Length: 90
Image 1 (spheres, rainbow, N blue to C red):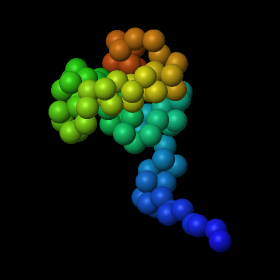
Image 2: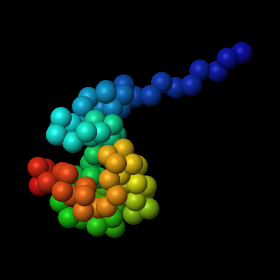
Image 3: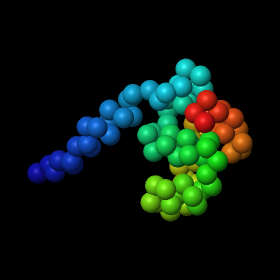
Image 4: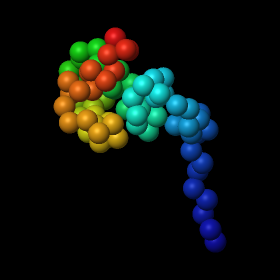
């Protein structure tokens, strides 16, 4: 007998398929998940990993993991590059 896995919340799927604002400005921005984009915006505004974690009620380690993924997707190496790339959000 096959067991069906629960289907992911439709709103989450829609969030992933909608392009992020500014995707035409920064190649790869549309690859970010909603959470990665949310964290990237906070980092671009000058918040530390610890502060972002407190704002979003997640561990600073989770913030770091999301940022690592963001850096890979956007082909960035430094936090300052992320801040510069998202300067239009500030």
